[in-house]
Length: 120
Image (tube, rainbow, N blue to C red):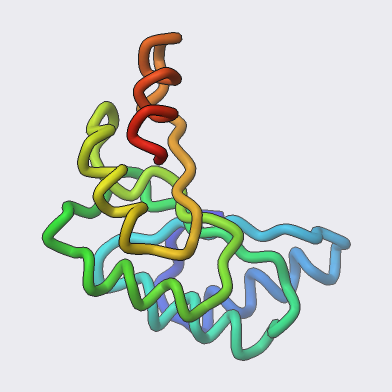
């Protein structure tokens, strides 16, 4: 689901999806609409399978905020950094317990081999 205007709006949207039977919820995040938003969802749905999709909105300098997401028991954080930036994604993953999912970054077999080499 897209970025919502407030944490309360996000909780309301998630409530609707869970009522409709969705078991996994992937929420878009961006700077200043991230930890506070998802933590409110986690507080309301402590057992929900939650994911964050950053759409390349962060840089490695944002690592402290991204580390905060580790406390929210997410399934994964999708594409936090620039597409194709496999080295910085590997550096970030080394500091997070939450798995990083790469989508736009993987465009070739060579990219897959690099992710295995860097252990992203």
